[in-house]
Length: 142
Image (cartoon, rainbow, N blue to C red; front, top):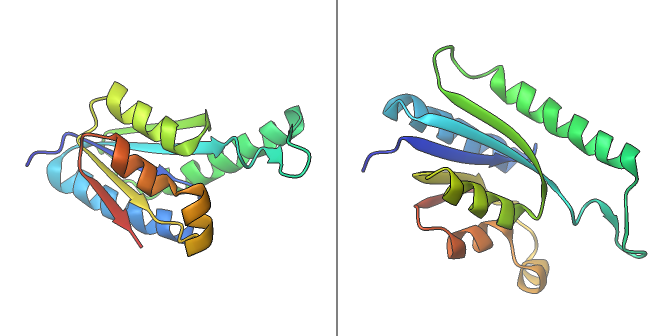
């Protein structure tokens, strides 16, 4: 199987860092373009009790965190590796699947956040959502 475009969603977590390393290794081996995607989760942007969206300063702080995470990862990428790094705001599962479809991604490598069984059952997980909504292979790293 040939991989020309590999998507690695990142969020600053330990499992996302592991997924990044696997994705980078595969991108180098296959001379593929590496897509790094940080999704500022809209669910995290709301105060859960009041269901009120953060103000502009909250979004600025979310964007700053995203740019820091991407900057740290970009520093690890060898010169010559094709890279597209993006920050999007929205529901992570939907943003990941949409980006994969719109860019003809050949493989997605993502971390599993390891939410508890009850939380995962109630809310679902991003990796489960992605697995059920994309046509390309998905590797979930623990």
